[in-house]
Length: 319
Image (cartoon, rainbow, N blue to C red; front, top):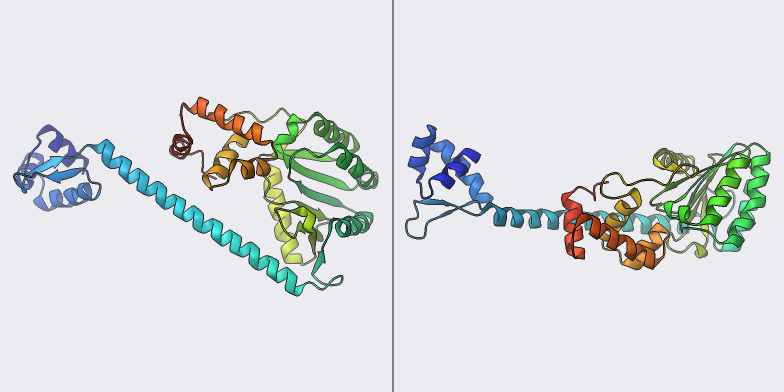
């Protein structure tokens, strides 16, 4: 195919017979190559003589193909998001229909107070370890102070504590101080650019997940179903392995963007607004927009469209 195209570049206006003779190949092979080039819109027929083949500008042709591929990727991403949303709705309906309180595999806790009361009971009975996702960015000083008695109670009993926060907490002195305090007591803390939900696992027997991932004030569901809890534990371990201990230096950029900036580009490519992306990353809207400006400068682009196109071309949106 490439040989045929290059020949047409050198000898514009050739026929199939001339191309076959010059390249010393069968006309059938020429026709096959021309079919591929035609599909890529890299050749066209002369207006004056339809038997004469002319090369087309590859840049324009490939830009059209790239745009089509990008649209296809966007459609598939949309399909994935729709499936994910449908699964979340079905899971919520399942929990609502089949949770009837204590003694069942799913226990619905319909308020923050109900969650805290049940957590106090579970923490008191925990013997081995707790695993937690803590999205939402830096916690308030009041929340950190309120969590310390529970943490001290667990660590005093030699219960292992592993907690994953968002990278954004590294910019908050109070959060760093709290993490170092936990480390002194024996707890382990790491950070990652993005966490999908709030999660608490106790003794690999109970898992607490929010009823509505976007609004934890609506309460949580306590899961005791072994298969579900095992899956959530495996999910936690995967994220834990890729997360960075908070005592270590802030994750550096690997090439053009940092892990947190890469996650921001991924969120924006999914159609999230600046406000929604900022919430997912646990940063302020002002910080999120500053990050976009810095990435755009680094990638030498002048618009959001160019930023998305460049991120896709450079493979920055790959998971």
